Image (cartoon, rainbow, N blue to C red; front, side):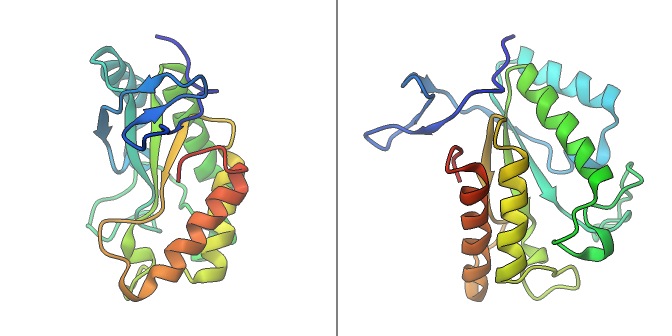
Amino acid sequence: MRSVKNLKLKVSANGRYFVDQGGQPFFYLGDTCWLLFQRLNHEELDEYLKDRAAKGFTVIQAYVLRGLDRKHPDGNASLLDATPLLDRDPGRPNEEFFKNVDYVVNRANELGLVMGLVTAKSWHVTDHPERVFDEKNAYTFGKFLGERYRNNAVMWFPGGDSAPGKYDAVWVAMAKGLKDGSGSSQLV
């Protein structure tokens, strides 16, 4: 397995597939572990990532934000003792939580896996008790993520699992923050 930490992907000239910075096609075979940052300890994570790399997967998809407390809206508890945001404020990312995200992203890249990161579940933007984003803090949070992981092999998905509806401007602001933070070096 070779590290992909410095891999930079883009859409091919004909718009039909992904290529690396050398113009070589990149095959996207993704596995999904939505709660990767909340549910696996480092030993379990290593086992999972090694297994996926050995099976030929090239991308691991996960949510950065999917629940803001130690207990998720789906009723399950996080194994981590850190919430992603301090006081549910997107302008105050919890360094303890993001040190774990750093570990996961770096370990995946070391094992040849690109991270496909969904910035936040839709309920953090829409009319839901977990809503925390508006246009301003969505941009700030996107920029934080883009800057923090600009030197990693990451593809960004600014949006959750539902149509943006009347919140389109919030998702667009988050995407702009990701682009600005990464220096437009990553797919958003």
